Length: 192
Image 1: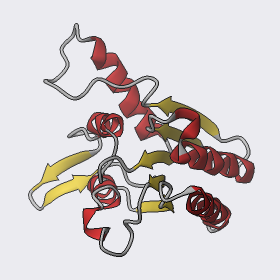
Image 2: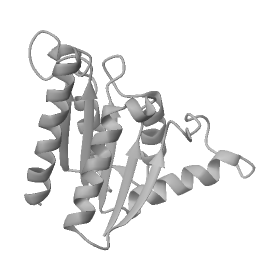
Image 3: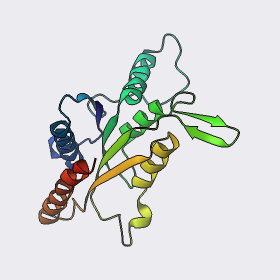
Image 4: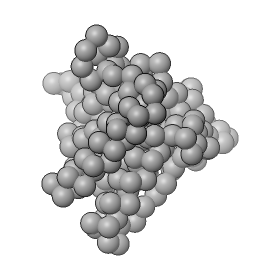
């Protein structure tokens, strides 16, 4: 089994999403010994943002090909996706731009687009400063709907979220949000 572990937070050791992805990957490896893990830190080693198609001398072409191959080879993808300004980080968007490749992860047919990257399980560790799953701010959540839409476009239908919300609403609320999210990880993996 191959697992691709992606982190995108700029907060380093203070990151909630990084803590959650680490807990998910650790639990997954404990439940599935022998899992091969590939790790990519999109903040520490950011990808170039998408531009014109890479030419032969483009130094970004080899890295883009490697990113795509890591995604295609993975059976499970664990993504740390903190909410920044109601959406995802620009580094995570750059990664998505490298895996959303016509002819590789999707193609167009007479009946519309068809995803080619199905059969994967994606677990997203979502962290948010406020509460966006319900209430007055729910309409400003462009993080989870976007990730569901783009991954679905690529053919991925097995998408699960581990969410810690309200992490900027005080230390007590943050601790409770993280505790609840971590508690849900075991059940998520036992259900697999």
